[in-house]
Structure formats: C-alpha cells, structure tokens
Length: 307
Image (tube, rainbow, N blue to C red; front, side, top):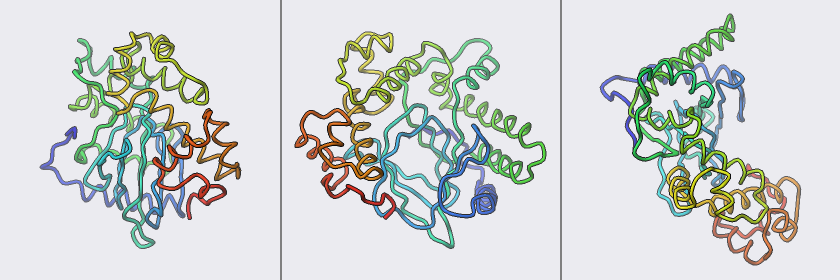
C-alpha cells in the first residue's frame, strides 16, 4: 500500500460535503459525467449481484460513502475502496470489482478525476523545475489513506459544479491544485511517468493501446516490445510491474471481457463469441471464461449484467 496522506487531519467533514453534493448532482443510479474531462461519478443504491470486470483508466478515485472491493488479477486478495481510502490508477489496468456497501438510504458513490498526460506534463515542469525525481518501481495502482487537502479540494470542485457560475473556468484550477498536491506527495514520482514522453509508463501505454485495439489478433512478444520501444526482457518486466499481469494475460483478460459483452448485449452464442475475440478453440475459451467469471459462458448469453 502506498501512503500519501497526513493521517492526523480529519476528512469526515469534507466527505460529508462530497456525499451531499453527489446526492444532489446524481438523482438516480448510473454513470455521470459532471464536468467533461474533469469529473465522473458512479452511483449505486444496492450491492453488486456479481463482480464486474472493468478496464480502469488513469484517475483518482474517491469513495465518500459506501464501499467496493477491487482485485487486480484472479486470486488476488485485492483491496477495499471506501471513505478511508483514496486510490490512484496511473495506468489502464484490468480490474474486477464488486460494490459491497450501498443502499437507497446511503448510496455508494465513486468520484473519479481523470489523469491526463498532457496536463500532467504541463504541471511537472512547474513542480519539478530542477528535474523530476527518479522512481525505483513503476506501479499502476496506489492505495492510501484519504488525503484531507485533496478531499477538501474535491468537495470544493463539486460545490463549483453545483453553483454553475464560472465553473468551466474554476473547476480546472481546482483540478490543478489536486494534481500538484499529488505530484508533491510520495506517489508523485509514479504519476510523473504518465506525463513524461518516453518513460516506462508511456512506453507500456503504447503496447496497452495496441492490445486493446487488436485483442483478437495473435501477438508476439517481440512485436509488442518493438511497439513499446523496449527490449523484450525490459518490456515484460515493466509491463507486469505496472499492470500486475503479463502482456498475454492482459490480452486474455481483454478478450474475455469483450466476449462477455458480446454475449450479454448482442445475444451472441458461445462459439461465435469465442471466434470473434480470437480464440481458435471454443473448449479452451469456455474453460478460461469459467475460470475468470465463475460461470460457464453459456450461462451468460443474453444475461442482464445488472441482474
């Protein structure tokens, strides 16, 4: 766990402010874009009936009320996101999540502030005028205690959105404040990697983008390493450090997630779905699908993801 807070400062008051604002801004369950490119929110009034598999984008996650469990890989013990934690995703990481605490009286809220490489690169020059700090190991996920200053800024952002007046001018400034505080924190050196061209994170991101776009195609490690501009051994090491899985495991995860979406939303049969996402063997697909999701693929055809 990466700690990036001063634990002696209370955050409960700011979390209550965030919860109050989100209650006003999100009138029903679902996903909301409260400020384009700056603030996204998920609201739920009941726990998950099953684990959901997602591709986490680089962002700051704040859960002011409710809770969810997050695991990075199959069998991973994972961690909890709740009012006492703040999670930073510094790469596109496959995760599986389950909302564990939510009700109509006390909905689950997750406030997400995207981390954009262009904005970070602008701030890095100001925060580190004498050169960026070195990082021993690049990670894709950082879990720590809620930082009072950042939580306070997040509450102020939502107040600005509620007020509406000049929010398009003021919200970006408040976001900058949060990013500067993060860059100056112990987690800063890892975030720096997002905004630096030719960093390990930026190189791995190129390979991740390729895998997402060509998940159904056969892949050779040498080709992926070339796309990333790294040696095969260096690429494999840094890819696993950032995503907690090998490139081939990452591709398999994306394939299975896509197949699940095809069978649920488009009523595609098991054989067609397996071929669509790049499996040559339907039996192998079925085995890996059941291992990943806990049910055979035939049970998911046409199934409501929220049932």
